[in-house]
Length: 132
Ligand SMILES: O=C(CO)COP(=O)(O)O
Picture 1 (cartoon, rainbow, N blue to C red):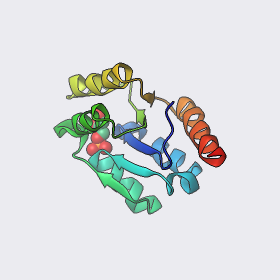
Picture 2 (cartoon, protein in one colour):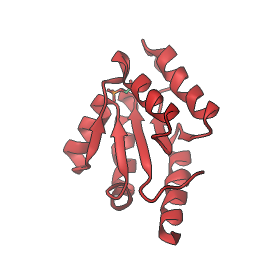
Picture 3 (cartoon, helix red, strand yellow):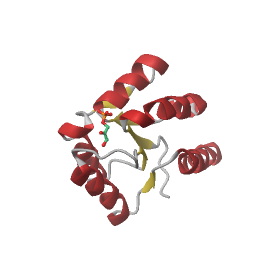
């Protein structure tokens, strides 16, 4: 994982995963306050409203938010993605979701798609920052 002084993290959650995203962000609040955050529209709105996080909001996922984050990632502007996908509910923008996850693999960007992995990735980023 490439580390930057201020990690640039994208946060995305499908509707049934948004409560988990809020709980995860609350767990890492102190760290996330020091990061540069972007998010899809509704996810970002909740993170800002419920936790007071400064987060750049892209469009909502179904209207292109995943693609905006993917484009930024391809340009080198994102260090890590936390994408809590809902594996049980079909999404109208499945191709966009797959494109974002594929872009992470193409560009070797850490992409946590469940809470357990997200904890490992965020903890590692925190430790790296503390050592820098
Ligand atoms: O659909 C999403 C990701 O694919 C998430 O979008 P919202 O955060 O706008 O709900």
